Image 1 (tube, one colour):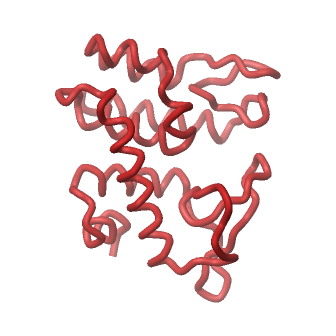
Image 2 (cartoon, rainbow, N blue to C red):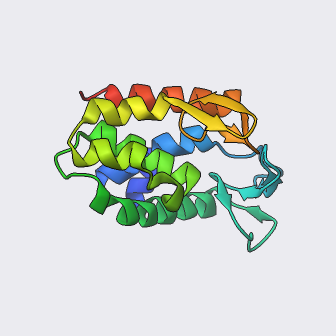
Length: 172
């Protein structure tokens, strides 16, 4: 069963299940050990588990079902916090890309004029372009919104932003 199907079974609406499945691909899962997914340190050294969950883990390993439940919960929570900043008539591809970025950098990190201004103006192309616009980190310019780790451009995050851009413009 696909991740999208599993998220639908957990009660996410179709749009959020599809967006969540895309986020799941970007975030990935750690390599399982005896069928369980362990907590690990991401590229920045942050304790991470399941589909990019961070903070203080409740335990050292999670089942696939637990990871899916955490993803569903986190996707719905983030969407509820950013939906009011995204016009209802925005294409689904724009909404999904904005959700992916908010999932990755956090809602506070996402609420940036680089997105909020073009969204408010219904400038979907400008919103998408902001995803891959140069981002000045402490130690260099990254190819994409906050595509840095500890202030340094990070190729993996730049690639993710490029994929989010391609998703964003899909429905334009």
